[in-house]
Amino acid sequence: MSRALLSVSNKAGLIDLAEGLRRRGLELVSTGGTARALAGAGLPVTNVSDVTGFPEMMDGRVKTLHPLIHGGILARRDRRDDLDAADRHGIGLIDVVVVNLYPFVETASQPDDTFEALIEQIDIGGPSMVRAAAKNFHDVLVVVDPADYPSVLAALDAPGGPTPAFRFDLARKAFAHTAAYDTAIATTLGTVDTSEGDFVRPAPGDQALPPRLVLDLPKLRDLRYGENPHQKAAWYGRGRDGFGAVDVLQGKELSFTNLLDLDSAARIVLEFSEPAASVIKHTNPCGAATGTSAADAYVRAREADALAAFGGIVGLNRLIDVETANAITSTFIEAVIAPGIDDAARPLLAKKPNMRVVVVNFDRLRAATTPEVRSILGAVLVQERDVVSEAHADWPGAPGLTVVTRRTPTTEQWQAMRFAWRVCAHVKSNTIIFTNTRQTLAIGAGQMSRVDAVKTAVVKAQASGGSGNLLAGSVVASDAFFPFRDGLDAVVAAGATAVVQPGGSMRDAEVIAAANEHGIAMVFTGRRHFRH
Image 1 (cartoon, helix red, strand yellow):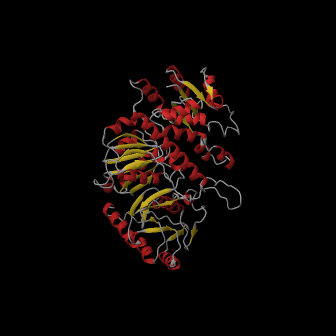
Image 2 (tube, helix red, strand yellow; image 1 turned 120 degrees about the horizontal axis):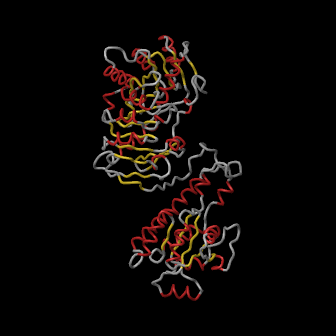
Image 3 (cartoon, helix red, strand yellow; image 1 turned 120 degrees about the vertical axis):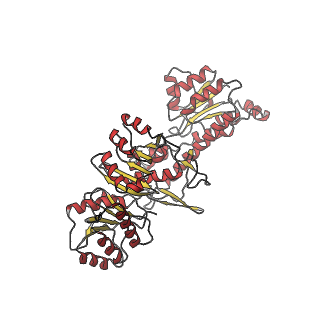
């Protein structure tokens, strides 16, 4: 090997790699800031402009797009005509190409950066060099990830040099790198508004769905199987956000359904700033609660339906401390997700070696604005994430809330309805949930009619309520409007004294009249939260 070309925006590990290449006899060729970094470290480096005979120009837009560069990368070493052409035109061969691209994704994530600044972060020469080197992988090592630098140096030292399989693995990674880069560009530019004759970037949280959806997600791991043992399944993610960046600390291998349930558990507790817990079975909560601490919230959520909580999936929005770990391990739980674990709690969780323990950055989960993608037969559906933003303000002062009955909710009922509304949005439709101020009392999930949802919730309450009426004095949240008064009659008969629902039915007047007849309070939010 004779020459290595280095041109990177991410300078991590650059000097160590360059020193290693020099020790192995390679001449270093570089551009712009990379060349300055190498020279600053005392390494001899040849600037690309000295190779091509042309200076870098147009603010760096043109520097490596030249036959003396691409000919050196693309020349096939087993083709005499390629080598003769290179020799005839004075093209020196390039055996290692180390390139990572302009930070377009990082710039796109900064809403204050202008459209013009975004355009300048579209790399042209970098992808061209990467693709050229990857195409000629038999003869050229292409390196796009600083994490691969040590293995590249080790491969150069191996008897016979880098193996064909190693070269091919680097090439595949390189093509994936440029594909992801182009995907990011296409997706970001697809959100730019040109309706007024200018190029306007959307405000955060106001991104339009792109005209073309291109997914580029690396496989994080194969799963044991899908929803059923005969179905293959795998887990894909970006590796930096949300469930693409979780840390699995212990337990059996995560399953397809575990991940769905962990997602459901996290969605509920993300709605709360106070300590909150959820216990999930088959993507629906069997219990959710807030408390004075993570342990208090968890116990309340578990006891909301202790029978169903057995073998459940737990979500917590606080670190797992010793008290919480003791509470979780006192019964059988399949998996738990939280923003972190105190060191003293880890040995306690480890006493349940099969229990999956997952840690993830909840701030990033909360801030995620990536559209949600779901598959249907032969196509995919995309939508914005549903956030219960109207419940993040203090009730009753939140915009859109309307008391539609003669009776106004009490302070305690307002507090209970706000709790209920945030949980209700994450239960499968049709749903009716009964709660107090900080704990679910009964949940009727995924029913074909709203009356059936009430009946299901009541049956659950009767199964766990002992001799008294567990639902007496409760509040009810309904994820969508009551199409008839029968649903409203049913929740009142069960013991509810206040109801929160979106409103919007053709028979709203009939339902309001029924509420007034029963002497209960009812609030319309003006916003539906179906979950299918």
